[in-house]
Image (tube, rainbow, N blue to C red):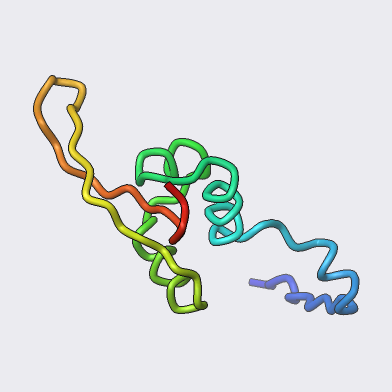
Length: 92
């Protein structure tokens, strides 16, 4: 059986920069700046981010001041639920 040879393509750094898309952390920061807060549900529905708490850890480690606010709401069945709303420090 013959296998195709794997090709490795190397791009110049300037070209790679243009090819990069926004990271999940970039999307979250942009959302926080535009909207003031984000929840896990919003992160999943808008950006496909399934581990928002992990990205918040990344952002905190990078030096961003992220505040976790315990929030109470109601689920689709009318039952009370708790979830976290994340905000940048200084935003209301």
